[in-house]
Image 1: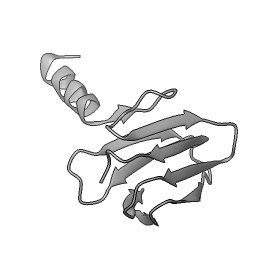
Image 2 (image 1 turned 90 degrees about the vertical axis):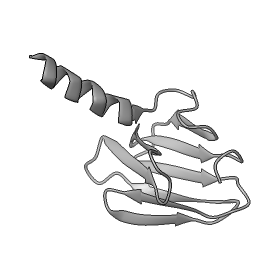
Image 3 (image 1 turned 30 degrees about the vertical axis):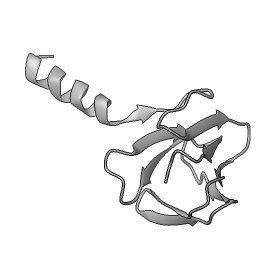
Image 4 (image 1 turned 135 degrees about the vertical axis):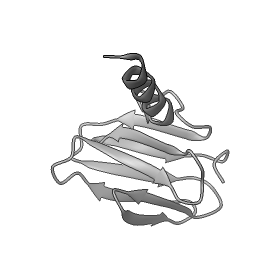
Length: 103
């Protein structure tokens, strides 16, 4: 692999974070792996949160939650709409907890 390809690969990895365990991946966001066959999203903030998962818009109301089916995916790319660089990948069998720091 030459230097330019290494740089491109490194730049891509810098923009995408893989969520593992319960470490906050973005301020106010926690991810916990589960054994379920779906992604669980819990919004504990006072405002609705708009996400995009592979082009599908998902709105999670304040103090509520929702589920997203895996349907053949092992990992899901989560993008916070109207938030620059808030993109990350989580195992499909996990729970995303959106806390007060994320508004």
